[in-house]
Image 1 (cartoon, each protein chain N blue to C red):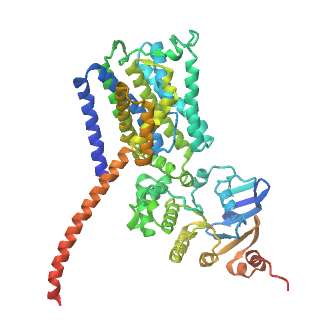
Image 2: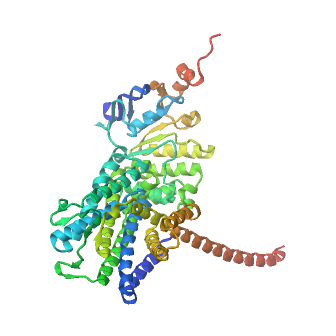
Length: 241
Length: 353
């Protein structure tokens, strides 16, 4: 069964001074999985995400992707392995138009001709045709998020890591994003960091709950929502009467 | 900007350049030609900063360092080689290599923008005070004495591979103008290439470019090196126009001047910095002759006015103005058309009822 593990962390730790943000986490992800990472604020999800994408260098432990130990790599090297990454705040090229944004992603790995094809495909798939020549900075927040998702798609990744993809979106956009994520999952393995429970219910297969830098529990959505520890973490301790 | 308009703009820039290239030496006196050569060399310097700052997002406060290094390297090499052909090549290589070396430490050390500006400025100022102290006869490279603050007399440029045939000032002007045109179209080509478009994306958002898989450090280093080479070319032309190179090229005034040219001409364009340098060069030399107003005061005022009123610079503001007028004209025209159509519909309406 080891063979189809595509990403794992081995006792991964990240300390900031005296604060332990991620504490000896062993995590593994199989091919074609759609895994959600949830947890209350400060649980260490985002730090974990940054360690996976090499934006932070872990204090201890290893990140292994497809049997390569990538601890200590640079972010661009992680991306070049065919991994699509979307950060929490929209990280886009606001001064450039929508098409250029997506083309820049497509042309990183694809040939010039193929990059143009991918760009128009992605624009069509995300229904961005009307705004394709608009400067991205002038568009609404949700649309910019969608374009960033398009940039992730345009890289044709086999593994996609998203940090809070629905932050600040309207309900309609959330539903559309859920569709897109399910679609991406047809061809790629995914990790989605989220804390919007409703959204997770829409997409989740397997959920990992973080709490105080450690994995509290792992399981499918029903198991998670009936787990009393998860309830305690999210709602606080029930007062003993 | 749409593509056909851009092509038109490029063609007209090329034609204007050619007209100046062939027209100026015939219609101007010798002194004006020499000062135009100086202006052209400074325009090349402005172009190099316009490329790396406006497109690469690298605020180099000491672009004059590579300008001066190019000029000094040319003078030293020309004296030692006894000819200018190899010296030009050597100076270009030295300027590019110093940019690459400095850039390597800055970009691979992941310095942020502010530190980068400070360090590049410091490097220029260090060169300024080091070279000023080299007036003794013991400071020489080969047979070339560095000459302290008196600088080095630059041997005039000669025909390729023939050190006995020197060029006249008019011909030096031709060389400088061709250098400007070549550098300009090289920059246009760079900004249109995949490399250039990725560099612009790095200017827009470094983290995003990195997460797309681009090695930001390498791209910035290449951009910085290209900029250093072009600044070196500018230095070579400058040394040839003046005939002498002194440590003053490294001083704070010149370092700031380069930044002002780019701000006034317009960041994010290539022709803007070129125009900025030419306009300010002639304005300051005109005011210098009049001696009614202190030039530094004037430059300071110009900078403040531009930052407050025209923060984008001359060229981008003109393009914006032009676009707005055109779109207003277009909407006016379409509104007229709509009105006409609306009227005819009103006429038809009762019939339909």
